[in-house]
Length: 281
Ligand SMILES: C[S@@+](CC[C@H](N)C(=O)[O-])C[C@H]1O[C@@H](n2cnc3c(N)ncnc32)[C@H](O)[C@@H]1O
View 1 (cartoon, rainbow, N blue to C red):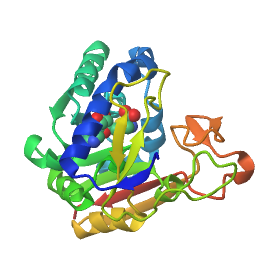
View 2 (tube, helix red, strand yellow):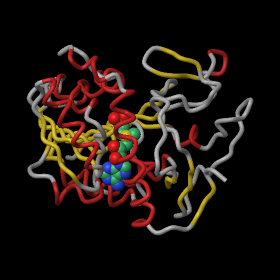
View 3 (cartoon, helix red, strand yellow):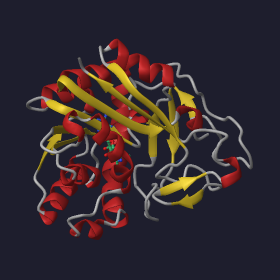
View 4 (spheres, rainbow, N blue to C red):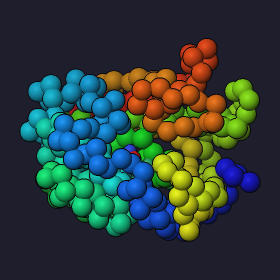
C-alpha cells in the first residue's frame, strides 16, 4: 500500500529515488513553464514566496552580492530566481539530468551559476568555498533519512554569521490522508527509521509518467528538524507556518495565487508549510 512503512537501507532507497528523479526531469522541463524565464524579471513562485523572508534575514537586507548555496536545486528554476534576486548561486543536486537541465536554462537565460553534482548529505566535500546563505525549499528533507548529517553539511557550508533557510511541507499536513473527505490521519507523524514506500507513475507537474515509479521518503517531525539544526550549532532566528502550498497535496485543495490551499472555511485548521531561518554564529 502506498505510504506503508518498510525496512530498506539508505543506499537502496537512494538509488530508487535517484532513478525516479532522473525520470522526472524531462517531464518537469515540459511542465514547469520554462519559457517564462526568458523574461529577465521572472521569478519562480517558490522564490517569490520565500524572498521577503530571505531578504529580511540576509546580511545587508537583501541577497545582493551574497554567496548562496541551493541544496536540492532540481532543474534550476529556483536557483536562477535566487540569482536574479542578486545572489551568486551554486546549485546542488544528486540528479545529473536535473543539473544538465539547470545548466541549459541558466545558459539560455544568461544567468551565471555553478552546478555541483553530489548527494546533499556529502555536499560539504563536493562544493568549493563557503556561503552567506544556504537555501533549500519545497520537496527536500522527505527524501533524506539522516537529518543530523544534513544539518552538519549546512553548518559546514555556512560562513560565520551566515543564514540557513528552509520552507517545506508541514509534517502535520504530511501525516494526513490526502484522499479523505475531511481531515483524517493516515501516515506517521513521527519517524521510526523505516521509510514510507510509494508507487506512483505520475509526478506533481504535468501529465507525463515515469519508468521508475517506486520511491522512498522519511517522515520528519518538527522536533527532529529543529533538533538537528540546533544540535549542529545553528541558532533559530525565525519560525513560521503557512496556509498555502506550491503543489496540490489533496484533490480537495483549491487553487490560490502561487499554489494551493484547503477550501477557505478549513484554511485555519492545519498548517501547510513550515519555514525555519537559522544562523551560524
Ligand atoms: C522537489 S525537487 C526540489 C524542489 C524545488 N523546489 C523545485 O521544484 O525545483 C527535489 C530535488 O531533490 C533532489 N534530491 C533528492 N534526494 C537527494 C539527495 N539525497 N541528494 C541531493 N539531491 C537530492 C532531487 O533530484 C530533486 O531535484
